[in-house]
Length: 412
Ligand code: ASP
Image (tube, rainbow, N blue to C red; front, side, top):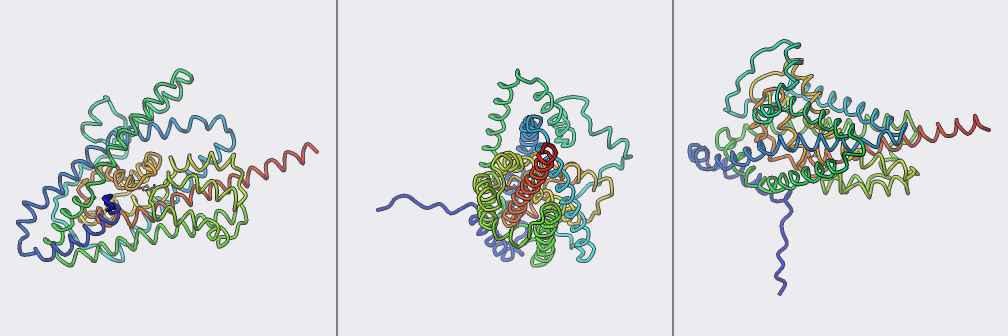
């Protein structure tokens, strides 16, 4: 007898938990007090664990992201072009996310789905906001989960480690090891997602019934549309402009990698397949792909950035508030850094969302509203993430080919 039990994949568990939560929530509408007192607390435990892990994850993953860029100098122009391309496409991505979020918010006003109280943070001037980004001590930003200050600490430490040069080998190793420990910890916490999702969503549906579907559906359409624009619009236009590559031909060749990313929801695991496909089917040199693709999987997460932009607006709407221009700018800044700091593993983008929310004074509990459907978006944003890396790889490879051709023409 085969004793080995096949474990249900986490994505499936979450999906089942979501369906069960909706059914149980709707059935328990008359027992809202019971769900509030006995079911919701388990959801709160899940949220507390997410809040706990977000500071160390942000600190160490951004540090490691910065440290991983140390070879950029070595690879010279390729490195510069790659980082520039990544920064520009990420800025595009967040803009699309924010515009998409705003359009959806305007055309389909979101019904308040929660009774969670939101306290508007005190109004501060732009100058004060800038000053407040810089920490005056090492500990309090972490205790208070002041994400912008934690990011500044991570950037300072990351660059300091690079500056140490040869002496830093031990520290780099230690940082990467600590980062791995927190990643493992995050993986364990994310394994509790089905329970967390069940408790949080059933409570939402018990409180407000069917009307909870409408805003969730609008939000889902908003995110998927924004992701599709980046993947099938922005990247294809860039490829056409810089390389003349036909978008249909590119998608046809790259489709197996996209399908793999969609089903596994991890950029990291997609690296070997991506490098292989780009060199065998698209003709990119391994020298370029083996640098741009792993770097992209570490620091370039356009899909994740889009998702965080739309999410911030959606969650703000659920609390009945509209983000101010300064808050939007903060979202752009934190989502760009989140893009550097998000690990290419399933669910990491949702944890990083906590950072974006706290940076604009929105409650992390807002994640409860989107956690149930996160896996669907995780699959979509991973496809965007890896397609962005691939488009960069092809563009940089093309620019390098042209540069070398010019060089040899000059020498001839
Ligand atoms: N799963 C995504 C990736 O691997 C990261 C995320 O959760 O947004 O690219």
